[in-house]
Length: 581
Image (cartoon, rainbow, N blue to C red; front, side, top):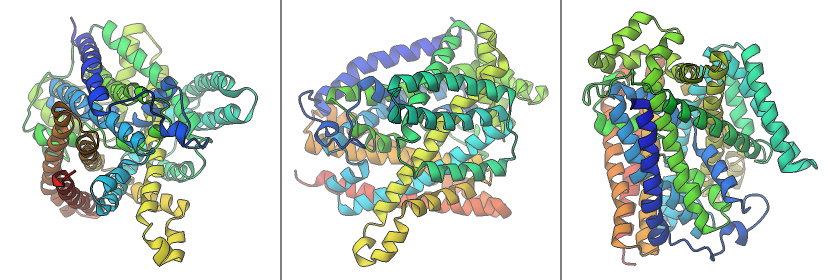
Protein backbone atom coordinates (compact mmCIF):
# COMPACT_ATOMS: atom_id res chain seq x y z
CA UNK A 1 0.00 0.00 0.00
CA UNK A 2 1.30 3.40 -0.95
CA UNK A 3 2.71 5.68 1.75
CA UNK A 4 0.16 8.49 1.41
CA UNK A 5 -2.70 6.03 1.84
CA UNK A 6 -1.10 4.37 4.87
CA UNK A 7 -0.37 7.69 6.58
CA UNK A 8 -4.04 8.73 6.46
CA UNK A 9 -5.47 5.35 7.46
CA UNK A 10 -3.03 4.75 10.34
CA UNK A 11 -3.65 8.28 11.64
CA UNK A 12 -7.42 7.75 11.67
CA UNK A 13 -7.07 4.40 13.50
CA UNK A 14 -4.80 5.91 16.17
CA UNK A 15 -7.18 8.81 16.74
CA UNK A 16 -10.28 6.62 17.05
CA UNK A 17 -8.59 4.22 19.50
CA UNK A 18 -7.33 7.03 21.74
CA UNK A 19 -10.67 8.86 21.68
CA UNK A 20 -12.51 5.73 22.86
CA UNK A 21 -9.94 4.78 25.54
CA UNK A 22 -7.69 7.62 26.69
CA UNK A 23 -10.37 10.24 26.07
CA UNK A 24 -13.06 8.36 27.94
CA UNK A 25 -10.71 7.83 30.89
CA UNK A 26 -9.98 11.56 31.12
CA UNK A 27 -13.70 12.27 30.92
CA UNK A 28 -14.61 9.82 33.71
CA UNK A 29 -11.69 10.02 36.14
CA UNK A 30 -10.11 13.44 35.63
CA UNK A 31 -12.80 15.84 34.39
CA UNK A 32 -15.52 13.74 36.05
CA UNK A 33 -18.02 15.10 33.57
CA UNK A 34 -21.56 15.13 34.92
CA UNK A 35 -24.45 15.67 32.47
CA UNK A 36 -26.71 16.80 35.32
CA UNK A 37 -24.35 19.59 36.46
CA UNK A 38 -25.47 22.96 35.05
CA UNK A 39 -22.80 24.60 32.91
CA UNK A 40 -21.93 28.33 32.96
CA UNK A 41 -23.53 28.67 29.51
CA UNK A 42 -26.90 27.99 31.14
CA UNK A 43 -26.33 29.17 34.69
CA UNK A 44 -24.78 32.52 33.65
CA UNK A 45 -26.65 32.95 30.37
CA UNK A 46 -26.44 36.55 29.13
CA UNK A 47 -27.19 36.19 25.42
CA UNK A 48 -23.76 37.61 24.51
CA UNK A 49 -20.87 35.48 25.77
CA UNK A 50 -22.64 32.85 27.84
CA UNK A 51 -24.88 31.07 25.34
CA UNK A 52 -25.44 27.27 25.24
CA UNK A 53 -24.70 25.83 21.80
CA UNK A 54 -25.45 22.60 20.00
CA UNK A 55 -22.42 20.33 20.52
CA UNK A 56 -21.80 19.91 16.80
CA UNK A 57 -22.09 23.63 16.15
CA UNK A 58 -19.74 24.35 19.06
CA UNK A 59 -17.30 21.72 17.79
CA UNK A 60 -17.24 23.48 14.42
CA UNK A 61 -16.78 26.90 16.01
CA UNK A 62 -14.01 25.66 18.31
CA UNK A 63 -12.18 23.83 15.53
CA UNK A 64 -12.37 26.82 13.20
CA UNK A 65 -11.03 29.04 15.98
CA UNK A 66 -8.03 26.86 16.85
CA UNK A 67 -7.13 25.67 13.34
CA UNK A 68 -4.91 28.52 12.18
CA UNK A 69 -1.95 28.24 9.83
CA UNK A 70 0.20 26.49 12.46
CA UNK A 71 -0.84 22.89 11.70
CA UNK A 72 -0.38 23.59 7.98
CA UNK A 73 2.89 25.52 7.85
CA UNK A 74 4.94 23.85 10.61
CA UNK A 75 4.96 20.30 9.19
CA UNK A 76 6.21 21.62 5.83
CA UNK A 77 9.35 23.06 7.40
CA UNK A 78 9.89 19.96 9.55
CA UNK A 79 10.17 17.76 6.45
CA UNK A 80 13.88 18.65 6.55
CA UNK A 81 14.17 15.88 9.19
CA UNK A 82 12.16 13.51 6.99
CA UNK A 83 8.43 12.87 6.86
CA UNK A 84 8.39 9.96 9.35
CA UNK A 85 10.00 11.78 12.36
CA UNK A 86 7.70 14.73 11.74
CA UNK A 87 4.66 12.47 11.61
CA UNK A 88 5.66 10.62 14.78
CA UNK A 89 5.99 13.90 16.69
CA UNK A 90 2.60 15.06 15.43
CA UNK A 91 0.87 11.86 16.53
CA UNK A 92 2.76 11.70 19.84
CA UNK A 93 1.98 15.35 20.56
CA UNK A 94 -1.69 14.85 19.64
CA UNK A 95 -2.55 11.84 21.78
CA UNK A 96 -0.29 12.31 24.82
CA UNK A 97 -0.14 16.08 25.20
CA UNK A 98 -2.47 18.07 22.93
CA UNK A 99 -5.74 16.31 23.76
CA UNK A 100 -5.06 16.47 27.51
CA UNK A 101 -4.31 20.17 27.25
CA UNK A 102 -7.28 21.10 25.05
CA UNK A 103 -9.98 19.01 26.69
CA UNK A 104 -9.08 19.80 30.29
CA UNK A 105 -8.51 23.51 29.59
CA UNK A 106 -12.18 23.66 28.59
CA UNK A 107 -13.42 21.52 31.47
CA UNK A 108 -11.43 23.32 34.16
CA UNK A 109 -12.74 26.63 32.83
CA UNK A 110 -16.30 25.28 32.92
CA UNK A 111 -15.87 24.51 36.62
CA UNK A 112 -14.71 28.10 37.26
CA UNK A 113 -17.61 29.90 35.55
CA UNK A 114 -15.91 30.05 32.16
CA UNK A 115 -12.85 31.90 33.49
CA UNK A 116 -9.56 32.02 31.57
CA UNK A 117 -6.67 29.62 32.10
CA UNK A 118 -4.63 32.58 33.40
CA UNK A 119 -7.30 33.30 36.03
CA UNK A 120 -7.30 29.64 37.06
CA UNK A 121 -3.51 29.70 37.43
CA UNK A 122 -3.88 32.71 39.74
CA UNK A 123 -6.55 30.87 41.71
CA UNK A 124 -4.50 27.67 42.14
CA UNK A 125 -0.97 29.12 42.31
CA UNK A 126 -0.75 32.78 43.33
CA UNK A 127 -1.87 36.28 42.38
CA UNK A 128 1.60 36.82 40.95
CA UNK A 129 1.04 33.82 38.68
CA UNK A 130 -2.06 35.48 37.22
CA UNK A 131 -0.12 38.56 36.10
CA UNK A 132 2.92 36.56 35.00
CA UNK A 133 0.71 34.25 32.94
CA UNK A 134 -1.10 37.19 31.33
CA UNK A 135 2.20 38.89 30.51
CA UNK A 136 3.47 35.68 28.94
CA UNK A 137 0.25 35.35 26.94
CA UNK A 138 0.60 38.90 25.61
CA UNK A 139 4.15 38.37 24.34
CA UNK A 140 3.21 35.01 22.83
CA UNK A 141 0.24 36.57 21.02
CA UNK A 142 2.51 39.35 19.73
CA UNK A 143 4.50 36.70 17.86
CA UNK A 144 1.28 35.03 16.66
CA UNK A 145 0.26 38.31 15.03
CA UNK A 146 3.71 38.79 13.45
CA UNK A 147 3.93 35.26 12.03
CA UNK A 148 0.42 35.04 10.62
CA UNK A 149 0.77 38.47 9.04
CA UNK A 150 3.73 37.00 7.15
CA UNK A 151 1.74 33.89 6.15
CA UNK A 152 -1.30 35.76 4.83
CA UNK A 153 0.78 38.48 3.18
CA UNK A 154 2.92 35.90 1.34
CA UNK A 155 -0.18 34.08 0.08
CA UNK A 156 -1.81 37.33 -1.04
CA UNK A 157 1.37 38.50 -2.76
CA UNK A 158 2.28 35.34 -4.64
CA UNK A 159 -1.19 33.86 -5.26
CA UNK A 160 -3.08 37.13 -5.83
CA UNK A 161 -6.36 35.36 -6.52
CA UNK A 162 -6.33 34.42 -2.83
CA UNK A 163 -6.40 38.10 -1.89
CA UNK A 164 -9.56 38.66 -3.92
CA UNK A 165 -11.31 35.59 -2.52
CA UNK A 166 -10.25 36.31 1.06
CA UNK A 167 -11.35 39.94 1.07
CA UNK A 168 -14.67 38.90 -0.42
CA UNK A 169 -14.91 36.23 2.27
CA UNK A 170 -14.64 38.90 4.98
CA UNK A 171 -17.45 40.86 3.34
CA UNK A 172 -19.50 37.67 2.91
CA UNK A 173 -19.11 36.84 6.61
CA UNK A 174 -20.45 40.28 7.58
CA UNK A 175 -23.39 39.87 5.20
CA UNK A 176 -24.08 36.37 6.51
CA UNK A 177 -23.97 37.57 10.11
CA UNK A 178 -26.41 40.36 9.35
CA UNK A 179 -28.81 37.94 7.63
CA UNK A 180 -28.58 35.45 10.50
CA UNK A 181 -29.06 37.94 13.34
CA UNK A 182 -31.02 40.79 11.82
CA UNK A 183 -33.40 39.38 9.13
CA UNK A 184 -36.27 36.85 9.03
CA UNK A 185 -34.11 34.53 6.88
CA UNK A 186 -32.23 33.63 10.04
CA UNK A 187 -29.69 30.85 10.48
CA UNK A 188 -30.68 28.61 7.55
CA UNK A 189 -31.13 31.44 5.08
CA UNK A 190 -27.80 32.97 6.05
CA UNK A 191 -26.07 29.61 5.67
CA UNK A 192 -27.36 28.98 2.15
CA UNK A 193 -26.59 32.51 0.96
CA UNK A 194 -23.16 32.46 2.64
CA UNK A 195 -22.09 29.19 0.97
CA UNK A 196 -23.28 30.35 -2.47
CA UNK A 197 -21.36 33.61 -2.06
CA UNK A 198 -18.24 31.69 -0.98
CA UNK A 199 -18.28 29.66 -4.20
CA UNK A 200 -18.66 32.90 -6.18
CA UNK A 201 -15.74 34.41 -4.22
CA UNK A 202 -13.45 31.56 -5.32
CA UNK A 203 -14.54 32.04 -8.94
CA UNK A 204 -13.86 35.79 -8.60
CA UNK A 205 -10.42 35.04 -7.17
CA UNK A 206 -9.53 32.90 -10.18
CA UNK A 207 -10.64 35.53 -12.68
CA UNK A 208 -9.84 38.79 -10.89
CA UNK A 209 -6.57 38.49 -8.94
CA UNK A 210 -5.65 41.47 -6.80
CA UNK A 211 -1.97 42.40 -7.11
CA UNK A 212 -0.34 44.48 -4.37
CA UNK A 213 3.16 44.52 -2.88
CA UNK A 214 4.16 42.74 0.33
CA UNK A 215 4.42 45.92 2.46
CA UNK A 216 1.02 47.17 1.34
CA UNK A 217 -0.63 43.93 2.38
CA UNK A 218 1.05 44.01 5.81
CA UNK A 219 -0.38 47.50 6.42
CA UNK A 220 -3.86 46.60 5.12
CA UNK A 221 -4.00 43.42 7.18
CA UNK A 222 -2.75 45.25 10.27
CA UNK A 223 -5.65 47.71 9.96
CA UNK A 224 -8.02 44.78 9.46
CA UNK A 225 -6.77 43.12 12.68
CA UNK A 226 -7.31 46.25 14.74
CA UNK A 227 -10.85 46.80 13.45
CA UNK A 228 -11.90 43.13 13.49
CA UNK A 229 -10.70 42.68 17.09
CA UNK A 230 -12.59 45.73 18.32
CA UNK A 231 -16.04 45.30 16.76
CA UNK A 232 -18.80 43.11 18.31
CA UNK A 233 -18.24 39.37 17.78
CA UNK A 234 -21.57 38.82 16.01
CA UNK A 235 -20.60 41.23 13.21
CA UNK A 236 -17.63 39.23 11.87
CA UNK A 237 -16.10 36.65 14.24
CA UNK A 238 -19.10 34.36 14.71
CA UNK A 239 -20.36 34.20 11.11
CA UNK A 240 -16.82 33.96 9.73
CA UNK A 241 -15.93 31.05 12.01
CA UNK A 242 -19.19 29.39 11.10
CA UNK A 243 -18.51 29.66 7.36
CA UNK A 244 -14.89 28.69 8.00
CA UNK A 245 -16.12 25.34 9.28
CA UNK A 246 -17.58 24.54 5.84
CA UNK A 247 -14.33 25.50 4.12
CA UNK A 248 -12.42 23.43 6.65
CA UNK A 249 -14.52 20.31 6.22
CA UNK A 250 -14.39 20.59 2.45
CA UNK A 251 -10.60 20.97 2.50
CA UNK A 252 -10.12 18.02 4.90
CA UNK A 253 -12.51 15.75 3.02
CA UNK A 254 -11.03 16.51 -0.39
CA UNK A 255 -7.43 16.36 0.84
CA UNK A 256 -7.89 13.21 2.93
CA UNK A 257 -9.68 11.30 0.17
CA UNK A 258 -7.08 12.50 -2.35
CA UNK A 259 -4.20 11.18 -0.22
CA UNK A 260 -5.94 7.79 0.06
CA UNK A 261 -7.02 7.24 -3.54
CA UNK A 262 -3.88 8.75 -5.07
CA UNK A 263 -2.03 5.65 -3.85
CA UNK A 264 1.21 7.58 -4.09
CA UNK A 265 4.65 6.95 -2.69
CA UNK A 266 6.54 9.72 -0.93
CA UNK A 267 8.74 12.07 -2.94
CA UNK A 268 10.22 13.43 0.29
CA UNK A 269 12.68 11.14 2.15
CA UNK A 270 11.58 8.93 5.04
CA UNK A 271 14.37 10.15 7.37
CA UNK A 272 17.26 12.53 6.67
CA UNK A 273 19.44 13.72 9.55
CA UNK A 274 18.09 13.90 13.08
CA UNK A 275 21.01 16.01 14.29
CA UNK A 276 22.18 18.30 11.49
CA UNK A 277 19.19 19.13 9.30
CA UNK A 278 19.14 22.86 8.52
CA UNK A 279 15.74 23.81 9.92
CA UNK A 280 15.71 26.58 12.52
CA UNK A 281 17.22 29.97 11.63
CA UNK A 282 19.58 28.49 9.05
CA UNK A 283 21.40 26.45 11.71
CA UNK A 284 21.91 22.66 12.01
CA UNK A 285 19.02 21.72 14.29
CA UNK A 286 18.82 18.54 16.38
CA UNK A 287 15.30 17.14 16.22
CA UNK A 288 15.17 17.11 20.02
CA UNK A 289 14.67 19.51 21.62
CA UNK A 290 14.11 21.87 18.67
CA UNK A 291 11.14 20.19 16.97
CA UNK A 292 8.61 22.20 19.07
CA UNK A 293 10.14 25.33 17.50
CA UNK A 294 8.94 24.05 14.13
CA UNK A 295 5.87 21.81 14.42
CA UNK A 296 3.55 24.00 16.44
CA UNK A 297 -0.23 23.69 16.47
CA UNK A 298 -0.46 20.42 14.53
CA UNK A 299 1.00 18.53 17.51
CA UNK A 300 -0.24 20.76 20.35
CA UNK A 301 -0.79 24.45 20.98
CA UNK A 302 -1.00 26.74 23.99
CA UNK A 303 -3.22 29.04 21.93
CA UNK A 304 -5.93 26.38 22.17
CA UNK A 305 -6.18 26.82 25.94
CA UNK A 306 -6.86 30.53 25.42
CA UNK A 307 -9.69 29.76 23.01
CA UNK A 308 -11.03 26.85 25.07
CA UNK A 309 -11.12 28.82 28.32
CA UNK A 310 -11.97 32.09 26.59
CA UNK A 311 -15.02 31.45 24.40
CA UNK A 312 -15.70 27.70 24.13
CA UNK A 313 -16.25 27.06 27.84
CA UNK A 314 -18.93 29.76 27.90
CA UNK A 315 -20.95 27.94 25.21
CA UNK A 316 -20.77 24.33 26.42
CA UNK A 317 -24.36 23.24 27.02
CA UNK A 318 -23.53 19.93 28.70
CA UNK A 319 -20.33 18.73 30.37
CA UNK A 320 -20.37 15.52 28.35
CA UNK A 321 -20.09 17.58 25.14
CA UNK A 322 -16.58 18.65 26.14
CA UNK A 323 -14.93 15.45 24.90
CA UNK A 324 -16.21 15.94 21.35
CA UNK A 325 -15.43 19.67 21.32
CA UNK A 326 -12.02 19.69 23.01
CA UNK A 327 -10.54 16.21 22.62
CA UNK A 328 -11.87 15.52 19.11
CA UNK A 329 -11.14 19.12 18.14
CA UNK A 330 -7.42 18.56 18.84
CA UNK A 331 -7.47 15.25 16.98
CA UNK A 332 -9.09 16.97 14.01
CA UNK A 333 -6.27 19.49 13.94
CA UNK A 334 -3.80 16.61 14.12
CA UNK A 335 -5.54 15.03 11.13
CA UNK A 336 -5.10 18.31 9.25
CA UNK A 337 -1.33 18.10 9.83
CA UNK A 338 -1.35 14.42 8.92
CA UNK A 339 -3.03 15.29 5.63
CA UNK A 340 -0.44 18.01 4.97
CA UNK A 341 2.40 15.51 5.55
CA UNK A 342 0.81 13.01 3.15
CA UNK A 343 0.14 15.54 0.41
CA UNK A 344 3.35 17.54 0.77
CA UNK A 345 5.47 14.41 1.15
CA UNK A 346 3.81 12.75 -1.81
CA UNK A 347 3.56 15.69 -4.18
CA UNK A 348 5.82 18.41 -2.74
CA UNK A 349 8.74 18.16 -5.15
CA UNK A 350 6.48 18.21 -8.20
CA UNK A 351 4.60 21.13 -6.63
CA UNK A 352 7.83 23.10 -6.20
CA UNK A 353 8.37 22.96 -9.95
CA UNK A 354 4.76 24.05 -10.51
CA UNK A 355 5.38 26.92 -8.05
CA UNK A 356 8.29 28.19 -10.16
CA UNK A 357 11.32 26.69 -8.42
CA UNK A 358 14.09 25.68 -10.84
CA UNK A 359 13.92 22.01 -11.74
CA UNK A 360 17.64 21.51 -11.09
CA UNK A 361 17.21 22.75 -7.51
CA UNK A 362 14.29 20.37 -6.99
CA UNK A 363 16.22 17.40 -8.40
CA UNK A 364 18.99 18.11 -5.90
CA UNK A 365 16.51 17.29 -3.12
CA UNK A 366 16.15 13.64 -4.13
CA UNK A 367 19.14 12.68 -1.97
CA UNK A 368 18.25 12.58 1.78
CA UNK A 369 21.50 14.28 2.83
CA UNK A 370 20.96 17.10 0.35
CA UNK A 371 17.32 17.30 1.36
CA UNK A 372 18.27 17.84 5.01
CA UNK A 373 20.68 20.63 4.11
CA UNK A 374 18.77 22.31 1.27
CA UNK A 375 15.02 21.83 1.81
CA UNK A 376 14.43 25.04 3.76
CA UNK A 377 16.69 27.12 1.51
CA UNK A 378 14.92 25.87 -1.63
CA UNK A 379 11.51 26.85 -0.30
CA UNK A 380 12.83 30.03 1.33
CA UNK A 381 10.79 33.17 0.84
CA UNK A 382 7.33 32.99 -0.66
CA UNK A 383 7.73 29.35 -1.75
CA UNK A 384 7.73 28.37 1.94
CA UNK A 385 4.02 29.14 2.07
CA UNK A 386 3.10 28.79 -1.60
CA UNK A 387 4.38 25.21 -1.90
CA UNK A 388 1.54 23.99 0.35
CA UNK A 389 -1.38 25.15 -1.85
CA UNK A 390 0.58 24.09 -4.95
CA UNK A 391 0.97 20.60 -3.43
CA UNK A 392 -2.75 20.46 -2.69
CA UNK A 393 -3.58 21.56 -6.24
CA UNK A 394 -1.09 19.08 -7.71
CA UNK A 395 -2.51 16.21 -5.64
CA UNK A 396 -6.18 16.89 -6.40
CA UNK A 397 -5.43 17.47 -10.09
CA UNK A 398 -3.49 14.18 -10.28
CA UNK A 399 -6.05 12.12 -8.35
CA UNK A 400 -9.32 13.54 -9.70
CA UNK A 401 -8.42 15.86 -12.57
CA UNK A 402 -9.78 18.88 -10.68
CA UNK A 403 -8.85 22.26 -12.26
CA UNK A 404 -5.37 23.22 -11.05
CA UNK A 405 -5.95 26.98 -10.70
CA UNK A 406 -9.29 26.52 -8.97
CA UNK A 407 -7.80 24.14 -6.39
CA UNK A 408 -4.78 26.43 -5.98
CA UNK A 409 -7.00 29.38 -5.07
CA UNK A 410 -9.28 27.19 -2.92
CA UNK A 411 -6.38 25.73 -0.93
CA UNK A 412 -4.73 29.11 -0.50
CA UNK A 413 -8.12 30.49 0.60
CA UNK A 414 -8.58 27.96 3.42
CA UNK A 415 -5.03 28.50 4.61
CA UNK A 416 -5.44 32.28 4.59
CA UNK A 417 -8.92 32.00 6.13
CA UNK A 418 -7.51 30.09 9.10
CA UNK A 419 -4.59 32.50 9.39
CA UNK A 420 -6.95 35.51 9.30
CA UNK A 421 -9.02 33.86 12.02
CA UNK A 422 -5.88 33.42 14.11
CA UNK A 423 -4.87 37.01 13.42
CA UNK A 424 -7.96 38.78 14.70
CA UNK A 425 -8.63 36.20 17.43
CA UNK A 426 -5.05 36.64 18.67
CA UNK A 427 -5.48 40.42 18.57
CA UNK A 428 -8.72 40.19 20.55
CA UNK A 429 -7.19 37.84 23.13
CA UNK A 430 -4.08 40.03 23.30
CA UNK A 431 -6.32 43.00 24.00
CA UNK A 432 -7.96 41.10 26.86
CA UNK A 433 -4.57 40.14 28.33
CA UNK A 434 -3.28 43.73 28.04
CA UNK A 435 -6.40 45.14 29.72
CA UNK A 436 -6.06 42.66 32.60
CA UNK A 437 -2.40 43.63 33.02
CA UNK A 438 -3.48 47.29 33.31
CA UNK A 439 -5.97 46.46 36.08
CA UNK A 440 -3.67 47.54 38.98
CA UNK A 441 -3.72 51.09 37.53
CA UNK A 442 -7.51 51.36 37.86
CA UNK A 443 -7.45 52.72 41.44
CA UNK A 444 -3.94 54.22 41.54
CA UNK A 445 -4.08 56.28 38.32
CA UNK A 446 -7.57 56.02 36.83
CA UNK A 447 -6.83 58.50 34.03
CA UNK A 448 -3.84 56.53 32.77
CA UNK A 449 -5.81 53.32 33.17
CA UNK A 450 -8.61 54.67 30.98
CA UNK A 451 -6.13 55.46 28.19
CA UNK A 452 -4.05 52.30 28.36
CA UNK A 453 -6.99 49.93 28.75
CA UNK A 454 -8.95 51.44 25.86
CA UNK A 455 -9.79 48.63 23.44
CA UNK A 456 -8.45 50.51 20.43
CA UNK A 457 -5.16 51.40 22.11
CA UNK A 458 -4.78 47.83 23.42
CA UNK A 459 -5.28 46.42 19.91
CA UNK A 460 -3.08 48.99 18.16
CA UNK A 461 -0.01 48.51 20.36
CA UNK A 462 -0.03 44.73 19.78
CA UNK A 463 -0.62 44.92 16.03
CA UNK A 464 1.84 47.73 15.30
CA UNK A 465 4.72 45.83 16.91
CA UNK A 466 3.64 42.60 15.21
CA UNK A 467 3.43 44.34 11.82
CA UNK A 468 6.90 45.84 12.26
CA UNK A 469 8.29 42.34 12.82
CA UNK A 470 6.35 41.00 9.82
CA UNK A 471 7.88 43.66 7.53
CA UNK A 472 11.31 42.13 8.19
CA UNK A 473 10.25 38.99 6.25
CA UNK A 474 12.55 36.96 8.52
CA UNK A 475 10.09 34.09 8.88
CA UNK A 476 12.83 31.51 9.60
CA UNK A 477 13.43 33.41 12.85
CA UNK A 478 9.89 34.59 13.59
CA UNK A 479 8.37 31.13 13.13
CA UNK A 480 10.51 29.24 15.69
CA UNK A 481 10.15 32.10 18.19
CA UNK A 482 6.36 31.98 17.81
CA UNK A 483 6.26 28.17 17.92
CA UNK A 484 8.48 28.00 21.01
CA UNK A 485 6.50 30.60 22.94
CA UNK A 486 3.27 28.88 21.91
CA UNK A 487 4.45 25.42 22.98
CA UNK A 488 5.78 26.76 26.28
CA UNK A 489 2.40 28.39 26.87
CA UNK A 490 0.90 24.90 26.48
CA UNK A 491 3.22 23.51 29.16
CA UNK A 492 2.26 26.33 31.54
CA UNK A 493 -1.43 25.69 30.87
CA UNK A 494 -0.83 21.98 31.49
CA UNK A 495 0.76 22.76 34.85
CA UNK A 496 -2.37 24.65 35.83
CA UNK A 497 -4.51 21.77 34.53
CA UNK A 498 -2.43 19.22 36.48
CA UNK A 499 -2.88 21.23 39.69
CA UNK A 500 -6.62 21.34 39.10
CA UNK A 501 -6.79 17.60 38.38
CA UNK A 502 -4.69 16.63 41.40
CA UNK A 503 -5.67 19.20 44.04
CA UNK A 504 -9.27 19.94 43.14
CA UNK A 505 -10.54 16.92 41.22
CA UNK A 506 -8.64 14.40 43.38
CA UNK A 507 -8.01 12.29 40.30
CA UNK A 508 -6.64 8.74 40.27
CA UNK A 509 -2.87 8.00 40.23
CA UNK A 510 -3.16 7.27 36.49
CA UNK A 511 -5.05 10.53 35.97
CA UNK A 512 -2.28 12.33 37.85
CA UNK A 513 0.31 10.79 35.53
CA UNK A 514 -1.70 11.60 32.41
CA UNK A 515 -1.76 15.31 33.31
CA UNK A 516 1.51 15.89 35.16
CA UNK A 517 3.84 13.90 32.86
CA UNK A 518 3.05 15.79 29.63
CA UNK A 519 3.29 19.12 31.47
CA UNK A 520 6.80 18.43 32.76
CA UNK A 521 8.05 16.72 29.59
CA UNK A 522 6.88 19.63 27.45
CA UNK A 523 8.28 22.24 29.84
CA UNK A 524 11.74 20.64 29.78
CA UNK A 525 11.72 20.16 25.99
CA UNK A 526 10.58 23.64 25.02
CA UNK A 527 12.66 25.44 27.65
CA UNK A 528 15.81 23.72 26.32
CA UNK A 529 14.72 24.49 22.75
CA UNK A 530 14.31 28.20 23.45
CA UNK A 531 17.66 28.34 25.26
CA UNK A 532 19.23 26.68 22.20
CA UNK A 533 17.46 29.27 20.02
CA UNK A 534 18.83 32.15 22.10
CA UNK A 535 22.39 30.77 21.89
CA UNK A 536 22.53 29.51 18.30
CA UNK A 537 20.19 31.72 16.28
CA UNK A 538 19.86 35.15 17.90
CA UNK A 539 23.56 36.25 18.26
CA UNK A 540 24.46 35.77 14.54
CA UNK A 541 21.28 37.57 13.57
CA UNK A 542 22.10 40.55 15.80
CA UNK A 543 25.61 40.67 14.34
CA UNK A 544 24.29 40.73 10.75
CA UNK A 545 23.41 44.43 10.87
CA UNK A 546 20.48 46.47 9.57
CA UNK A 547 16.95 45.13 9.80
CA UNK A 548 18.23 41.70 10.85
CA UNK A 549 19.85 43.25 13.92
CA UNK A 550 16.65 45.06 14.90
CA UNK A 551 14.56 41.91 14.40
CA UNK A 552 17.09 39.78 16.25
CA UNK A 553 17.07 42.11 19.23
CA UNK A 554 13.27 42.29 19.31
CA UNK A 555 12.75 38.53 19.00
CA UNK A 556 15.59 37.80 21.43
CA UNK A 557 14.17 40.12 24.07
CA UNK A 558 10.65 38.69 23.69
CA UNK A 559 11.83 35.09 24.08
CA UNK A 560 14.10 36.00 27.03
CA UNK A 561 11.16 37.66 28.76
CA UNK A 562 9.12 34.53 28.01
CA UNK A 563 11.79 32.29 29.53
CA UNK A 564 11.99 34.47 32.66
CA UNK A 565 8.22 34.40 33.15
CA UNK A 566 8.31 30.67 32.48
CA UNK A 567 10.81 30.09 35.31
CA UNK A 568 8.72 32.26 37.64
CA UNK A 569 5.59 30.25 36.87
CA UNK A 570 7.43 26.96 37.39
CA UNK A 571 8.43 28.12 40.89
CA UNK A 572 4.81 29.06 41.62
CA UNK A 573 3.65 25.69 40.30
CA UNK A 574 6.08 23.74 42.51
CA UNK A 575 5.10 25.84 45.54
CA UNK A 576 1.40 25.23 44.92
CA UNK A 577 1.97 21.54 44.23
CA UNK A 578 3.75 21.09 47.57
CA UNK A 579 1.17 23.12 49.47
CA UNK A 580 -1.08 20.93 51.66
CA UNK A 581 -4.58 20.63 50.31
